[in-house]
Amino acid sequence: MITKATAAVLRKPHGKFSFETIDLGELRSDELLVRIEACGVCHTDAVAQDITPLPAVFGHEGTGVVEAVGSGVSRVRPGDRVVISYPWCGTCPSCVEGRGYICDYFIPLGFAGARLDGSKTITLKGKKVSGAFFQQSSFATHSITTERSVVPIKDHVSPEMLAAIPCGIQTGAGAILNVFKVGPKDGLAVFGTGAVGLSAVMAGKIAGASPLIAIDVVEDRLALALELGANHAINAKGGNTLERIREIAPRGVEFSFETSSNEQALSDAMECLSMGGKCGIVTVPHLPGKFPFTPWGLFTRGGSLHCIMQGFSIPSTFLPKLIELNKQGRFPYDRLIKTYDFKDINKAFEDTKAGKAIKPVLKMS
Ligand SMILES: [Zn+2]
Ligand SMILES: [Zn+2]
Image (cartoon, rainbow, N blue to C red; front, side):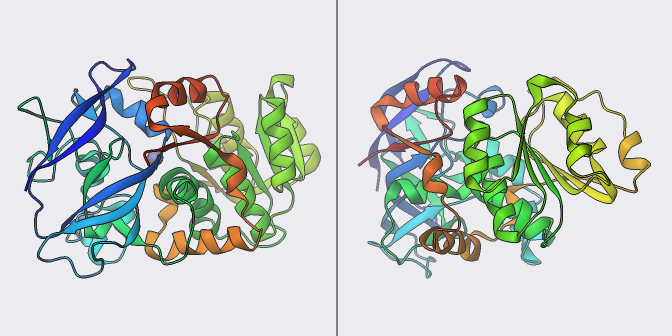
């Protein structure tokens, strides 16, 4: 069965998306067809434009209603509402151990624009093009994904609230709660107050981090970080960020979390640690850029640098937990969301680049 869908297709890196009709092919036994209701926009959708072969359909934070399932699918049925999170192969040693967030095949599953065997899910004007981005390509009215990637959602939660969480917000909250396991009185410095950084701030508050310091160069983001739980805000434009952190935490902080991709921020994040502290990073410079850093600060403190993928989260349990924390008023990520009609996808990308939207979410229906 071939399904026609409307997708936002990108033909040139960092160009404009155009709306085109695509054909989605037959479902494999472990796959499902989802009618997409909403999809978040994440920094990775921009970075990947230099990696994934074009033309391509991006989008990796889809949510919607299952329309059809392959013969081997048992966890979800047509009519179920699902959130689509990161892909994992299910058979490599990491996946078998229950750590799909570090699946051996994360890069090809995420960025090759095809299934792991190289086959494509999307045909555009008779030609196979890159789809299966994060095994979903959800900037479209319909998406083929795998049973492993989806989390069924029983509660009534709006599509925009669901589409906001399965990547960046999960990453920020997961870094603090799953990876660092921050405890009360642990100091935490969060560099960059976009969606990932602010999620880390909210999670830091839940964990009781103190001091909880937010660092950025945009005043209104810092003001929001203070409202969401930071107890100190530092505008890095003023310089001397490290000295200012040391004034607040003379021994340094137990944990730092760098989300901005700025090389001074990474240096400060490594230098502001207390003895034995941990620095987490979630971004890299755009290729072929490099971070010119010395591990001196880490070395002299017995510290460590941790690259954190997806907050080391298991979406089937972690996403419902974030939704529940939101209902309790303890994780108010709704304050980060800006909703756009799907037709305004180019505006959503422009606004994100200009810093006018923290967590854009596209609404398909
Ligand atoms: Zn795997
Ligand atoms: Zn993402």
